[in-house]
Length: 155
Length: 181
Image (tube, rainbow over all chains, first blue to last red; front, side, top):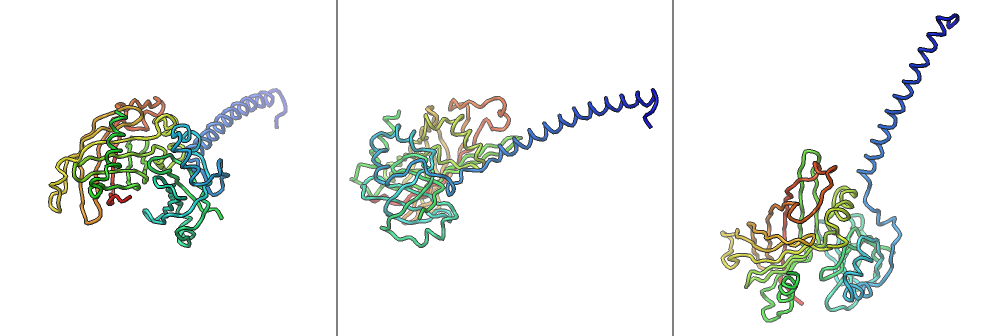
């Protein structure tokens, strides 16, 4: 079919067409990939506290002590990090359907207020005041108490 | 101003003389909402601390910027790292006064609240209407107001300028309970 000078010319034409097609295809591929990456990045999930390793492990009272000693330095160290705190349950309550556990080892002024993830509701119901417990969550800072969010119970 | 705020907070906390006039919540709710053609952005904070004195009408509110929860993790990250710089300014505070608090009853539930909002190191006087529901063991303050992003020296990069409103609506709902040591 491609025999003779005419066929050769046609082949060249096809080749040229093939190349520009490749370039266009690559361009579109790059655009689609770019879009996919940015959509993924835009929808990137929140930190999964349950699966995350705690950056710091400490007792409720030592965390409070550190905050009371130097709030600014302590805040830079712990806030935004997943931390694991061991303490005694002072209070168990609910807020908008999710558990809130207050840890206090005897400090008269401050506690650690842990706002639990919805997935922890069943476990939270089995807890009792005074019980010692390990809670992993994200520290958001210190007001009158240390605040932790997205908390989970660690056995 | 920081000193003044602490003075208000301390006086509200420490003066045990009329402890029965103090009301507190550690689970107050504050949210903000930004509407733009590109997207709507909303963030909720359920860990707001608010202390009020029913005899003077004084109120002191404190919240952690990192306690604002966004639907998208990326927005939360940008908010804390780039816009409000939570590592430098971890808290926002409001200290002010609820006008004519004594005249509030079942029929008359609205009054004005005036005070200073401190955010991102900048201060701005805020005055808004607050709805007050008093029951035997609870005082609930509800309301909203608008703030201009520019007033708080928050820099929005031009590439996302269309994604974020120039004026943000802030809503609050604070369930105060009697303060007991």
